[in-house]
Image (cartoon, rainbow, N blue to C red; front, top):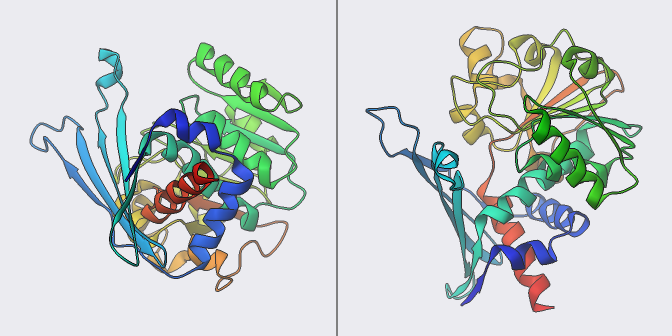
Length: 314
């Protein structure tokens, strides 16, 4: 069994190949039970958690396990720690243990870009990136892979982290224009794609700000009582998800408007696999607003880790 660390993952990752690998995986045959998230100290509401995400397809069986410790940064430690274990489907033999933290950054951004390839207008040029955490540069670079993005607007609460995010994007894509923005409503009105990867507890993006034809990508929230957009935006949008079972179990972006009677489960137009397999339609007009909510899937982990293994083998 091969052990693959974060440096090896980063050394071979590329969005063009990874997005293609995810598209193939989501269009094919697979199994993916609902992921399981276990609070480690539920009585005290501390937030520490452990999660298990299983999936399989015709080539592999895999599971990602990760820990989430939100107070770790104050101790100089990462919030997330993750590993992905792959087994051969034909024999059940272990194939590889892959660093899941680095894979998660890449596959999260690649899955959002894959969804945007079905949901964003073909003439999309301007991206608004909300959030300046470790995931943020990946999100911008992935979306630029599937659309002709020529400007990235970066919004964040921490000015220094926003500058660092800008520098990281431009280091990878020197020709991509980036600028920092402070007026979020104005930037929202300018955007063709809005990608949010934040820890916001209350809505950042309001439906009244978003212009017809915009695509909104929400990846930051995994809690039923928090959300990155308001109910008005959900009402105005055609809504898509990475996984119905996971999103409708975890994501306040949909669960809150459902509880308010302003949205219903039937309002989810499709999940990512249905788009990739051609079973459901993506964007249907230049004027509609599309919204993609993701909380992450085990299949994306499986496909991304397998892609890494194949690249290293070559």
